[in-house]
Image (cartoon, rainbow, N blue to C red; front, side, top):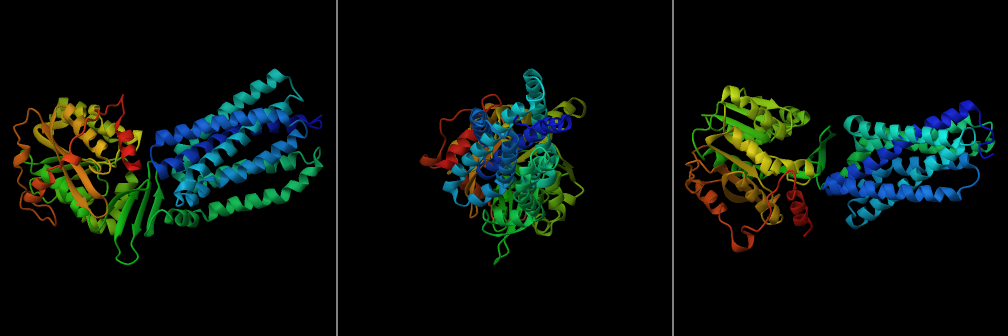
Length: 517
């Protein structure tokens, strides 16, 4: 027999290994999709492509398993060794290939297909091994049930445990170790019926050593790999539950830059241009600004500008990632830029999703009638479906309900040049929520032309075209400059674009289309 009369204990272990290999398989799939989302954006596309290719490859692997007729246990161990090596190093390979952009997608597809095919081989081979000692119906029932349980454990543990605690690189190496441990245990448990397994020990030990080395040196590997993505020296990097935070510093002029999930958020040399444009027009639009809501802006730079107004009594800052606000309170380079603004007694910080916060704030209004005078939306660009919901008609409808009748709001709106369709989609979506909107833009060396949308309710008496900026400290923006910024030429003016909604999310696709042009 192929299994050379495995004992009941050995057969039980082979059955238990189904759960482990299923866990590893789904984890490799999620790691590849997560890396691609981080590097390329558009997580829906990356996860869809990865899952589709992986399932297709598993089907190919399952089909190819019929050509393996002898030495099933040996073939199973060979597969585990191979998939542990390729899968364990998959995240590192993708990061190292990314600077050679044309090679990235072929490499990603190849890794997905190879790992998927190997995972597809595992289950049929294990099932056939187990049918030597039990009925086919029992074997299939046990194998498939454990396979699904392992997939559940892998899919749940990746976002909740592995990614936030280990990061992408360590997670990849750790799953590889778990995979190779299946082979290592098999070499011990099955050494008597399969004495030739001793020849697999050298390669198994080498791979285990490489994977342990990857975990031990993952910080250095990560720093090197990510260093290929950024021109400047990385002085801080951390994978949080919600995003990857990277801070860089230019080796010559010392300029600090913040990146979230690989997307530039600000550059020290011109962040004042962005934040003055974001904050000062809205602060001078409408009645007296006393109660301010800032959605996003965990770096504290928008708060720095808001605190220049003596009438401000309370600022609610909503940022989903507590690590971002902790960094902005304690990390010297950022603290020096924001002027320690997050520690101001007027500031209250809420760590929750902006959509959920606004929903709860609206529910509280039935008791306290405490509307906001200004709402400043300083969120990342809508480069994913998760961020897309914070640029929808439904979201702006909620924002309208917590904004006072003579209040105003502003949102950063990406580039009106590079992502022109996305910019005007945001403009049109705000209008659809019963606002009058004034689009304007500014120029930053680090970003190029950047866009904003300033809005008041249709019922408001505020004239958006007569805004005068108060005499508070500024480095860049003047009243005249603001009025010029609100003028658009024929070739960058409004477009016929759809309204972005929760149920018809058009914006992030328009955004991606603009980046790819």
